[in-house]
Image 1 (cartoon, rainbow, N blue to C red):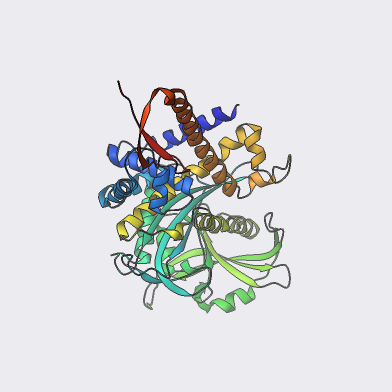
Image 2 (image 1 turned 120 degrees about the vertical axis):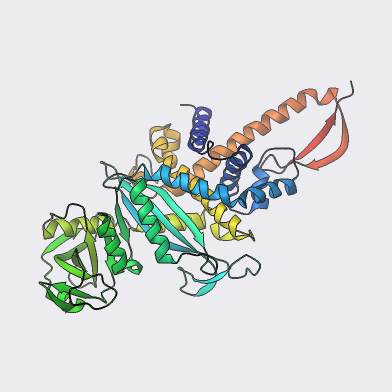
Length: 448
């Protein structure tokens, strides 16, 4: 396969990926949406005045910025596109897919004029700064060969000062919709911040499989007796071992079925749910940590349930890698839009772009060896392909789109060279933003 052929195939894949949204969007909105995604990738940041440098057309930069801002501010089409993307990706979820849910942040410490700024906790430093939270869900699938594929499912930027729903209400609505759209497939994975009895009650009622990292501050019911969490786990023995293939560490674990009271207030005959409690320790001298888990098929032995939970939770870090890439490589926190709706829409557009990039992993593995070698650390070293290779895939797709633009620029210049001797040109020079090197377009006038 030639390089140009591969670039053309990536273009076709990009067009086909976006065409599924063309029926629900107006033509002007869809065209701006598609061109902005290419600009986002080429500029590697969400600053609109830099994105427009890569958008073709003879309009001035100011007009292009106004055009993008106008469509970003369309709340109705934002909701329709957000729902369409959610439904489209949820249909791809299988029974063994992991739906990893976590919260991230967009920190803007120096911003003052951005709408509805609120104090958020910076996950990197632990300090509270001005910014926004984002609620995110990512689908992780494991192939037979052991390679892991990631697919961004949902992302929503919000400010607590303006949104009607609380964090828990937003999560509850998401769980209902994802259960419907995926036909109740997949296993939900949560970190410690989601150890909540209302959440677990909803998951059990909807018959969702889940794994939640336990905080360890609640009472449990064992053999119809209410007991402290610490007392229960202190009696559990670590009978089994699990060798993590990713961190190359050994975990000792034990498992036990317990019940959790889901009533908001103490009652004589409380409503309870049954879940697995898994106690885990690093090696023999490491720290302890705990999980609550439940699956559609709960007929597991203690050894099987512990191994399954640890295998699942070891992949939770994938959503953190996705956050890190979006912030470092696509520079999400450099966003400079002032309107709240525009920030939400651009975050959605970037999420769709990342979804396309991640979908290209299988394509490059099957493509020309020139691209396959680009993903490797060393010659014939395929380990990188099974790891988080999306940094390199993003750079590779960016190079492909930029090379397509350079080819167009070269063809344009060659045509001008052929006819320049026959033409008289005016001295009016305008800024031409159709090419990444910000070249000047000379306005040629033909005297017939």
